[in-house]
Image (cartoon, rainbow, N blue to C red; front, top):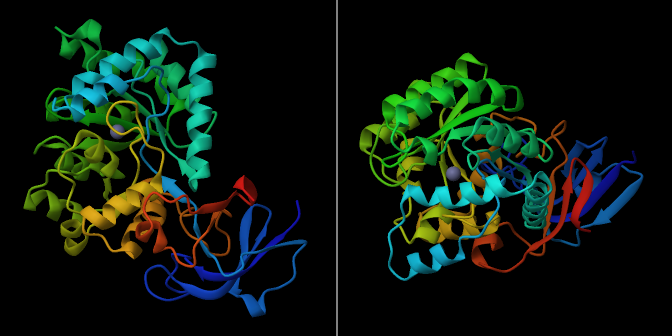
Length: 391
Ligand SMILES: [Zn+2]
């Protein structure tokens, strides 16, 4: 493998305050040397050491690759009509997931893998270099295990979400479904996953059921993360903090006690504005969380029902416009914040030793990600030092 010098970077986000200005560790007229898939050197362009190859950024901005810590990419089928109906005035309810479950069960491995690969490539073209991927559209022992095996083809950040919604076969026996999720399904899925997740919400799983599901997963070595407080107030956030979850995801409807709990914990508040956008719901209040001292991540929640976007830049623009985040905060949350939500220290930063996940923007500053909404600004994407988009 040859080393690469990316030089003449107008504005470099490192996310290391020791390397540059502010929380983003911003450097002007900077350069990065990549070697062996890792960042080998960061500093002033004028001081950069030689490398085997070079890339002239011509004054453009470079940021760490986006870490999308919440996505549902193993599915089949299409819910265009449901979206159109919702935009025509119908309310969103958790039960729509069952439509995708039927299509996913009927799909072949090849069909699911092709859709998954297409979405991962689509995300990469928009600057995402690490994406988490959940099961949750199989809801049988075999279909959930299959989803996790497929997810493992594209990421190490694989999440067992057998508790996405009660399987249709158990509509009259939710307790029986919880027994399945914490028993035979967990046995089949735990070897393929790093995380356990539950949709803790009215219409899905209540606090007691969610606790049983998460603690069963933890007993098998999985680390919890929770879909919490998306559609209304509920026990999800408090449960996530109590169990030491890496992340409480959505956090749209929070009490002051929920905000305090997040602020005084290591549990990241992962905000998913694509879901509120696509369900025409009220956005989470990022400013309230940030001012309280909580760590905030920003992710897509890519799924065919409530947030069918792979675009982190879109989420950044919405977060700045409608969730009272500054552009700096939104970019940090979509990179370093996502890494925190996945408990990763090797991504979301551009410091020596980090994985060489870089995004060159067709813009002089990362602020343009919010300033120029909807514009395809991602020019070149390197994952572990290899060009995966543009270039
Ligand atoms: Zn989700």
